[in-house]
Image 1 (cartoon, each protein chain N blue to C red):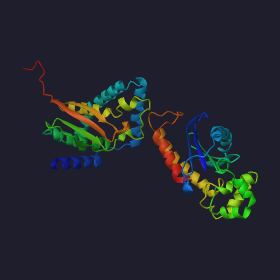
Image 2: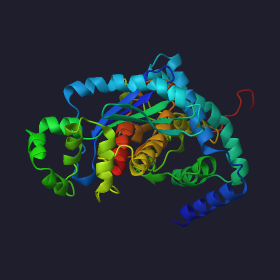
Image 3: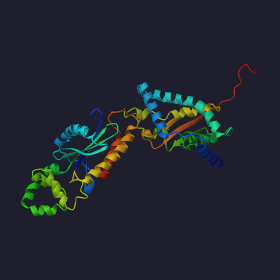
Image 4: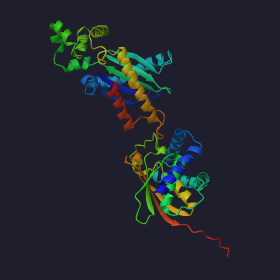
Length: 210
Length: 193
């Protein structure tokens, strides 16, 4: 699972961005975006702002949950009271890991039963199956829903309640630290957040929850 | 030693009974805004900002000593500079800021000491601007130097005060150095014979 987190100001201007990977289930916390995807992420986030603006008036919540999806990239949003947007793009390891591995799909296609059994132990196989079946998301969720890993595996299930809850906790902690960061008298509204302390705290929140 | 514990008890009691409290964040944000505004006004000439803060503090100190004496009710001269230091740290800072800095690093002649602040209520939330100069030049809490200087001057002590380290700059402690220059003698007006 790779994450791209961005804070967007009131003028749709970026204030802060941070890329990281999952630390759960033995993840090393490194993002696995391809070079192309890294550049694309900013555009995906930016395009989802329109949907955020639509959704933000429909309920009184600050956490808007999943707002947008672009192929395998899912975008969750959190709004602060002053209309600053926290956007988290999360991507299951499918596209990046399958391209990194030599030929996972070819071996999978030949022996389906062995794939099902191996999916019990390795989550990285599941998304590669979804690319195999034409990348349709519904098949992924039903497949992983059938396995016993669903309760702990945030990575494989971008739409599950567990993921939603983990991201909510992540946002809550970032929000708390964000408030502290902007309380600094030398910070002005819509200024880029350059505080290394804040960056470290976002990283810590990412490690803790995602 | 007994005078030290007496001072801290006194400070504690005054703080509990005779001081009106105000929201700490209000103070923090107000002071922070003042410093930020001064930085802006002087176009980030931090040496000048330090001077302005010190001057503001000095003017506060000139008056604050009156408040201190009224509240602490100690209409008695400190017998020596060491006792003065105790009263500053354990009563003065306690009743106005609810902190008790540690007194250390006395010089042999008892004229110079350091106040080490474990916590600095003025500096909560603050991160110095990362323009490469503020970290080396700005003393964010410099107003405190001025306050001490002004207050002590009104009780016949001329002191020199400055910060030598600040956690905001990445140091381990926040430390203020206080040096007694001289006791100011009461000078009679020239006409009086």
